[in-house]
Amino acid sequence: MRYYLKIFKTFYIIIVLLSFPPRLSAEVDFSGFIQLDKRVLREETDKPFVGMYNTFRLESKAFLSEEVSALASLDLRYYDFANTESLSELSQREEINPLEFGLWEGYLDLYGFLVDEVDLRLGKQRIAWGTADKLNQTDNLNPDDFSDLLDFGRKLPSTALMATYYLGDFSLIGAWLPSLRPALLPAGGIPFDVKSYGFPIYEDVNLIIKEYEIELPPKYLRNSMGAVKLAGNLFNIDFSLSYFYGYDDIPIPEVVTITSITPASLSPPLDIEAAIKLNFPKMQVISVDLAGEVFSIGYWAEGGLFIPEEVKIEITSDDVLIAVALDLLKESGKLPEEIVYLEDKPYFKYTLGMDYTFKSGIYLNAQWMHGFFTEAGEDNLEDYIMVFLEKKFFREELKLKLGGGIEVKDFDDFSENYAYIIIPEISYYPADNVELTLGTFILEGKEGTMFGQMKDQDQIFLKARVSF
Image (cartoon, rainbow, N blue to C red; front, side, top):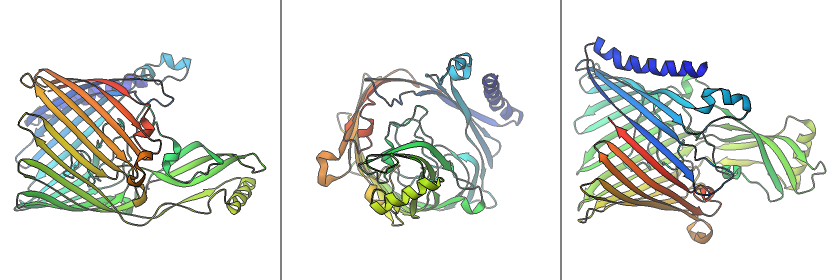
């Protein structure tokens, strides 16, 4: 029954989007797309996350007057895999054909608000800051969308109030978000080991995580987030300076509650079962970005000085006997007395990039990213060099693209701290606004790297996209 209510609500929203603008006698623009994403794993794996979704998005923008416009877009995601875990669920259509839908963006634009130089935008919106190609270090207002782990740099819109004050060739932008929206994780699970959280796990200790608990910041005014940005152009170079105060959208461990220790004699090796409580750390970011062109070579650079608050992991237990055992393990050195997960020391993340189109028509795009979106703390930042080449043929009806990148965790010990990803693709455009793409992901690397932990996730993919 709930499944059919969802369907009814979906079509109701579509009807509203299609019907309300004409009643307001407004000029209305419609657009959207349908994208199918089909993937298969090349080999068997214990942690598959290949279950991808298809997307239908419909957007309606109404120009109510010269001073007012409104936008609403509906996002519908439907999955190819079932969520069934029991025989009884085979009779529930929503488990066989899972779908998610909701408002993607919905906001009101007020031009010349109070004074001619000020524009105001209120509602759910995507606030994209930065000049890099997806690998943005200054884009911290919207949460990360990790629903596709191999599509880097995706973000989700957030409810916000944004004001822009135009000062000739410059603009001053302020944004306020009433609360944190966390990052979105993939529906098919994460193919990472728990040790990727980074806190020490000793060789003779097997830590078994039985439960994860997430605690969001309470929705008080003091926990709201905000940012300001000054943007402009000098000497044909676009630039901006910005400041952000808020939270990281990726939770990190704060409390480890031990529920079981075996053997009771505390003789190694030990199996320790635990529940982890994760919180979202506060942070400030001072950022700068720029973009320009010289000798037909496009270039961009952006970086952020991240100023975190210290996060310590507390190891505890609700059981008196286990608490005593923990004290003994700490005294013997088998468990640390204190774990500082994130130090209150500033660290700098940056992205450098360039692109160029050769006379042969080959397009080159290259970027160097120091510090991925999920990485925090100076000692945890890795380097990623991403490059892709593309060439179009047959009056641009066919496109060949070879992309990939290398991840380096430690240049001083490169042979044990590297990984790579290779992404060859071929795209065909049979008609305007229609794109068919066939490709593959090839991943390889050492266990301690991000790509290395996904080396058993090699995939073949087929995408079809129709825009209107």
